Length: 123
Image (cartoon, rainbow, N blue to C red; front, side):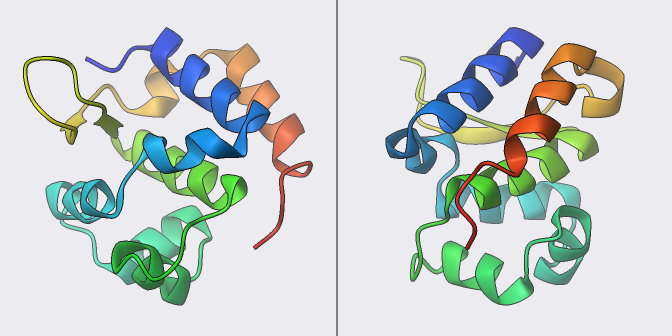
């Protein structure tokens, strides 16, 4: 299961290195997460405040998202209780249900994310 320390680790990596952003969630994982939640691109756009056109381009691998976009997408998915996971020796990457973010996020991590979002590269 994707635990709070894992979320904190992934977000801190994202904030410190742009090279990690692609490994946090792939186009296939983003499509799978939406399918798991029964969300359209429009719903994900509303929940994440990322434009539908950007989501579509990411999912079709026409565009690599910047760090702020990745955070916005991951936070929207985490709030709904879905997170990506990487290859773990038992299988490849995917997505799974987790405890919704509102119920599990560390208040300090939430403050860190809010404080650093403005510092990240804009689209």
